[in-house]
Image (cartoon, rainbow, N blue to C red; front, top):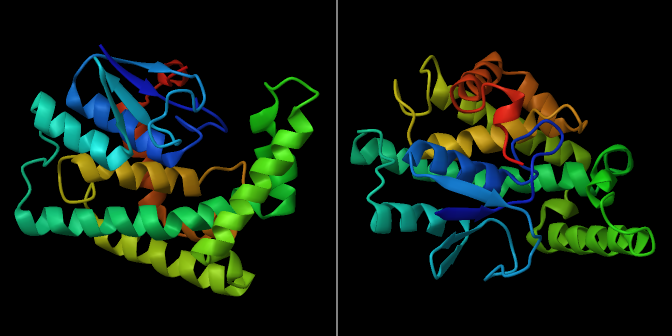
Length: 238
């Protein structure tokens, strides 16, 4: 049995992390039996989630988990698309993961009203004596990461511009197609869904959410993917 280590669903999303959501969706697409496990970072090979337990093997990082599923289990996430189309899918995925992701991190951790109304609830399961310290230390770590990556150094107006341009590009590429590359979902839809649904999350008020909500194409896309892979609230992993 494959076991995916997750944070768990939160704020109406399949998982707190878009990278975990991406991997959940890849596993659903694979048709392989799997279960989810919540144990924090315990055993995580790279100190991050998600990671996959496959027998004695532990595979970290959503991209390498996909590669493992393809190479070790024969999964085909190509959707039958051409090499050129799949190259576009890869480029879109990396735009989402390495660029727009950080706008979401900023919205959750750097914007005070979002942190105080939503993000801080992530720590509610911790014992009271360590909860305030954990909140402070993790937030400090996330703000330092934002500064090191560069997104934290931009002005609000600059971040808004980046959000608008990135999501407009994605909406344009999606166009009238039901899925990212055409009439059938593929592995890159796992990333597109994960990051757009995270951007649209109503728990966080941000320029990223405003940019996503300005595109009916993106909202309809997330709805289609929800109906296909997460049609009921009880289908969300524990």
